[in-house]
Amino acid sequence: MMGSTFAILASCAAAIVLAFHFEADVPRGDVIHHHSLEPPFIHDWWQDGVPHWDIGGDAVVTNDYIRLTPQRQSRFGWIWNTQANDNHYWEAKIRFFARSKNSPGADGLAFWYVEHPHKSKEPGPLFGMPSNFKGFGVIIDSYDNDHLRDGPTVALIENQKGQDRVWDTDRDLQGTAKFRCVFDFRNTDKHDPVELNVAYYNRKVKVHIKSRRQHTETFCGEYVMEEGLPMAGYFGLTATTGHVTDNHDVVSMYVRTLGQPIGDPQIPIATAAKFDHGADQKEKEFWKEGNAQSSGSERASGTPPPA
Image (tube, rainbow, N blue to C red; front, side):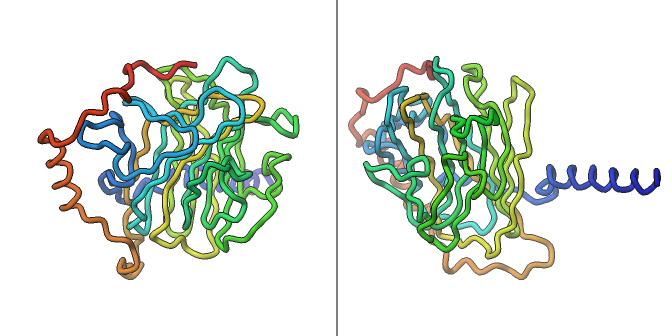
């Protein structure tokens, strides 16, 4: 009996290690700049905002961070990649703050990979997104709606068919999330942004979240998609506030490719949207030569985001 119990515990421990490190032996590519966000966000050569991203709602761009919502009631902000994803497998690392002097704060923010970005002044019910989104989202939820004292939480929701579904936000997505975990991401030190890691590989989505200075890291969960995610979807971030508020600030987001799984046939990329790297570089060089007007009125002071 003792031997069988030990074997079960050993296999469980091995499963946990595998869950945490399934990507460890998978080759990672370089940062894909046209899918990433990296400060400084305001460039002399770019008059319309952040290269390759659309920004709307109550979101505001500074050189050091993008504030999706200010610490004010009933606000909604978003930022969407204008370049369709051209990689079959990928990893995204998002560094952010959710901070205010309120206790508790709300509502939260979300990372999305969807077929159709929601660029509107009117927020949907899912942290700004409509209920019939097509793709998946990682919901970073500050407010404990059901008062079970199990928040703040991080949850994965998926809607590959794009159906108009009812999401149980009153119970913090307990009945509709594919997995959830508890992680206190609010009010970290001003030099300690929280890091969310979302990896998609071989039909699996895995989510980690951590705070470096607090030396805390949580493996939130994994979910195997019934159908593989299509390329040509869009990365985005949204945030909302309600009666209770937080500043929701994105410090950076880096997207990398994840390597080809062993034994898989070569994946055709003809259906992916092609990004013209040569034209992009020429445009950058053109504006760097002084052909753009400076947008100095939009510059930030360079200070860390305040609470």
